[in-house]
Amino acid sequence: MIRRSVLLGTGSALPERAVSNAELAKTVDTSDQWIVERTGIRNRHIAGEGETTGTLAILAARRALEAAGLEGKDIGLIVLATATPDQTFPATAAKVQHAIGANGGIAFDVAAVCSGFLYAIAVADSMLQSGMAQRALVIGAETMSRILDWEDRTTCVLFGDGAGAVVLESREVAEDGPGIIASRLHADGAHCDLLCVDGGPSSTGTVGHIRMRGPEVFKHAVVNLAGVLTEVLAAAGIEPKDVDWVVPHQANQRILDATARKFGLPPEKVVVTVDRHANTSAASVPLALDTAVRDGRIKPGDLLVLEAMGGGFTWGACVLRA
Ligand code: UT7
Image (cartoon, rainbow, N blue to C red; front, side, top):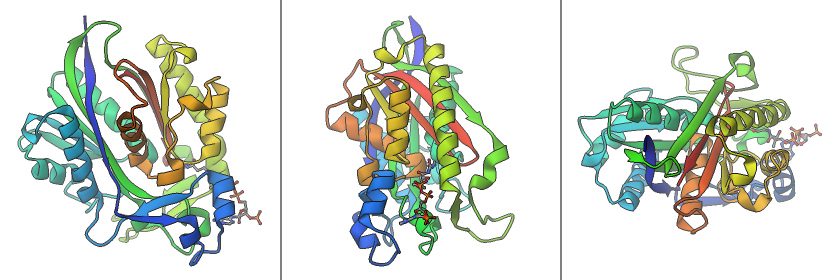
């Protein structure tokens, strides 16, 4: 027997308003054809009045708790990944904690942008394994639309809003049983200018907008993801052929295809939601995970690989059995 953080339930939430490429093309100098060909994105959800990172996170958390058959009071740890918190402080995780009635435990945010969920799940796993808590809610939630420059067509067509959450519980399981088997994380601040926000409370006193040198980020993404996938599969002692589902960060269909090809994984094993959700940063992996759990693709016992790369640069991957 071995102690692992076991996945008990998943949940997600999207803003009500869906925006198609055609609708965007009415106000931005772009086209459905360009966006689909270069990214695979067809649609994204954009937060309206009253919808925030916090409200989406709370909805996703409640759905994950319901799926796990648990209540807020059962949760001792909340780790929320976001680059778009409701406020600079308090942590959005603290708002979630209060809303679901999990008061008294641990709650904090992590900032690793698009890799945020991978960072959050690794941190939560470590804390569960060290006995700091018994059950955790790990959330990725973003309202990227609030930091987009809607006059910059090279970025504003790429992102969307949403939230995803998972419930983890520390349990004794068999060696081939469920739970997180290995996680690997990396960062390299040398490239922080290639993907960043040009503002912040301590530098400009403004919120700022996303700036990205897309083609350069693309090249780093393919190399870094290949590296961390090789590393995490070796750490978990598994071969690519053993993987049932890859649940990747949803930035660009071409990155998903390139990564799958490199690992000899059939495209049918890659969960793709970039067409519907666009790039939702820290929310994209748990949103994709919840989508594939709820539509019946991911089943108990399946071996999953989660991976992401984003601003910082930061990147990471995680192997777990559902
Ligand atoms: O989530 C964090 C990680 N992020 C990523 O992984 C993003 C990685 N990068 C990418 O996904 C791609 O680089 C992009 C989708 C951002 C861009 O695709 P690309 O194939 O690298 O295009 P490009 O930036 O080289 O631009 C090609 C052309 C340019 O025009 P010229 O200079 O060739 O005349 C752009 O001005 O496409 C033009 N362009 C657009 N045209 C219509 C750029 N954005 C648009 C647009 N609509 N929205």
